[in-house]
Length: 353
Image (cartoon, rainbow, N blue to C red; front, side, top):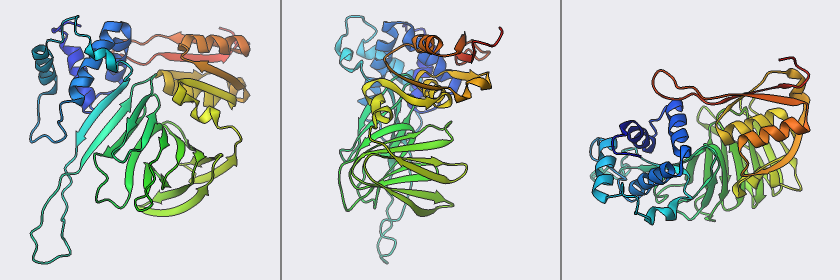
């Protein structure tokens, strides 16, 4: 990438403050995967941002220009700079969002001056088609799946709970603290734990949130109109399904949780899954839109395991092992210079073209 490529610089800078549109995100991801030098350059920026220590900013800054200036002064346009290779496994966009929320420290103590304290949140996002791992301030380890976002305070001190916000899919190994429960907020649902390992699949486009408990014990709670009510206390090897639109919870026992947690090892596992489940997983993993154009295929179920396979190979296997055929519609450049998602149309082999 050359210094003159201001458009890409702007997109990288905007990604750090969660300002990218869906189309801009697609464009940036397409650029990153176009050639190895691009992802190396992008990772340079991620590392600079990580070490900038800008957890609180007194005023607005020009992020695109600041990043370009920093890169120029650091001399990292030069191809001989190698130290960034240590972080090439990092496939997430790290966003540090500063949210100032003022409160009264000693509200109930008369005669004491009121002080304010800034609440600083950190947000980590896994890029599409990749996973990333993050350690929270309490030592809790979280794996984030493709296109997922986790928001959490930079410190859990002085809070009754360790509250974090998840959009997408995350696998949690929670550090035990009986005096400060760990809570994952997912729209209408909350997962409350003291210390355990579990998986949450809560992508925004999914009508059902899936929680699989590996070990320990968790409490599922419903949040409606700021009121919290207990739904279910889960035990290991149980999987719960919460339908948000119907506000309905179902669960079952599973001897093998592999298909729910295999993504943490870079695998996509299907086990007698309906085609709609297959479609949702592929859409989230590869950042594409998939349209099922033939209702005859809605009853089709699929079993298979994919390890770091390109989308075309997954679709090819579906084509060979079922009555499905597919058509790929490439991404298009839009009027604002962003790109649309690729679209996959799946139909029956019996359907005439």
